[in-house]
Amino acid sequence: MQDFSSAPSNSGCKDQAREQAADTAAKGRFAVVIPAYNHGGSVRTVALGAQKSGLPVFVVDDGSSDDTFEQVTGLSGVHVLRHEKNRGKGAALCTGFEKARQTADWAVTLDADGQHDPEHIDTLVRAAQAAAQVSGRVIVVGRRTGMDNANVHWTSRFGRGFSNFWVSICGGPRITDSQSGFRIYPLPDVLNWGIRARRFEFEVEALVLARRHGVPVIEVPVAVHYLPPHERISHFRPWMDFLRNARTFSRLLTRRLLSSFGG
Image 1 (tube, rainbow, N blue to C red):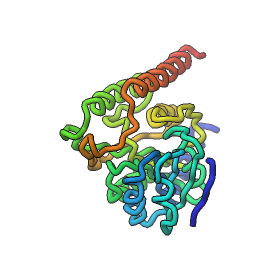
Image 2 (cartoon, helix red, strand yellow):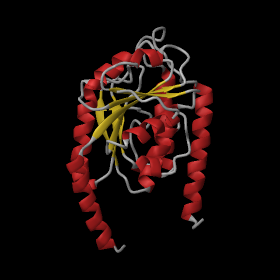
Image 3 (cartoon, rainbow, N blue to C red):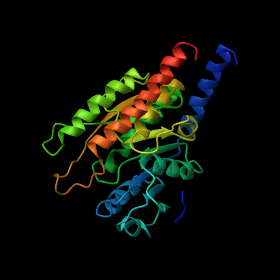
Image 4 (cartoon, one colour):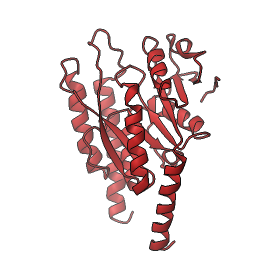
């Protein structure tokens, strides 16, 4: 199948939360969302790996100019969504979430460049199911191990530390890998948090707003595979993405400060 688109009282609250947790765990419907932009060389392998999880798979081609769309078109069990123009990773995730919410309560996200091992999808799913029994809705972040590998550019390590610090300062959770794209989000909750960022910053803003909405964030270790620089396709632009992140963090921090003063 293929789809082509452009894309109360305290005690009462506690009872409701417990009921919601039980209901969430009972449903346990998961789907995989893979945002892709010019990943024609790897997206098919990633989609086929995700397909082995037995979950519905949604690939969102974010206006690619290569053969990304053709690589995943026709794969059994893979739903292909398409943006006519590049709109950003966050926008692609939202398109996937909107479609996945029709049949799923959770979205597993992983990148199309092959750095995440689809075999770890089950690890994240089990973590979400266990946490749901206690907390109801949660975000699960796959904490990447092996980031000291020689193929990992220093900007990736610096960016992760920078992001971790500012996520915490802005009122988000204290975690060790705030930039990992291998995650599980609750649906449709993540679409209702008012996340404004539509590019890479979407993922850090989601963490901050999740905490503001009382949604816990947990981490589980996952392996990461970085290709040598000459083989890897990355759309990370250090200075531009740094400025975008700084703008997002400034907005989130201002909002936190205003809230603390009753604004």
